[in-house]
Image (cartoon, rainbow, N blue to C red; front, side, top):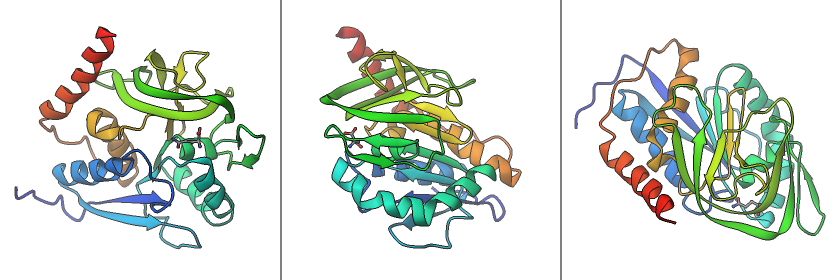
Length: 252
Ligand code: GLN
């Protein structure tokens, strides 16, 4: 479908540690961000941000930081602090957005402590702390989102984590858990929203069945470039998948 490119409007996704922090289909979030931005008329670029220094982070609109087991988190956390932290802080201050899932979410907080007591200091971009428990939380997740104007107001995904994340006063939950465990299986909250950062335990991958959240991220990031409202897209297929998960949850 020939899609007119809006002037020279470009949209760039920064993919953090694509080789190591990318489990349970998380790369589907990258594909969704790129395709939807193109369908909205933007020229897209994806910058892969693996380990090592980089000069490519300043022009990124949305960063994606996927999930990873304790082993992969240990392999990247020094690099995150040494080579990515300052640029991420600067980017978010300049209006870029970050979507972080599970292992990525945990490392953007103050620390992640594994079940055997090993503590990985995070980069403190969000006011959360995580300590792993013995039991893994695995299964479908349905959330009543607390992002103003999100329509539909539900989010659906899949969780698989041992970490229990607790929010400090500067962070707000992404939403209320309707099905599943969410952040810690105790306070019935899932994820975190703080400034331009959205953290969540929802794999799935998350964005293909939550196109409204994808557009929320794209629009928020492009606002700093003076972009107006995004065009309307026919999301009937994506929302049919979303609704099927909701109906399945209600049958349980
Ligand atoms: N290793 C972390 C945990 O078990 C994150 C897992 C993940 O990214 N799915 O909580």
